[in-house]
Length: 68
Image (tube, rainbow, N blue to C red; front, side, top):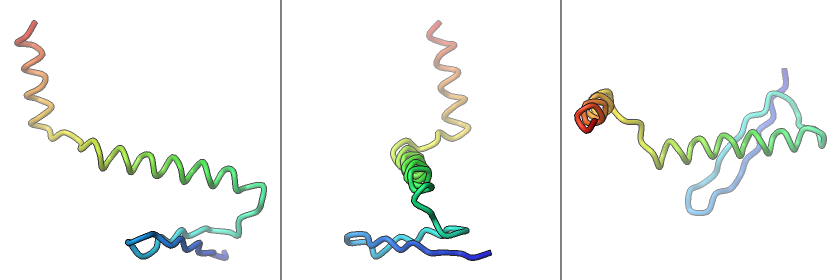
């Protein structure tokens, strides 16, 4: 198996390295672009919207019940 590295320079942050299990082809670039976009969107959501703790979820459920 051949691994290819794609090194992307990042302003002010060094670089990002993407490891590909095989050399990309022109036909596969749209799939790679879509996968990168989805991965970055997931990371953005995780960074912007922290996952509530178990206690926070339980408290929120109590508040919902108490309001009704």
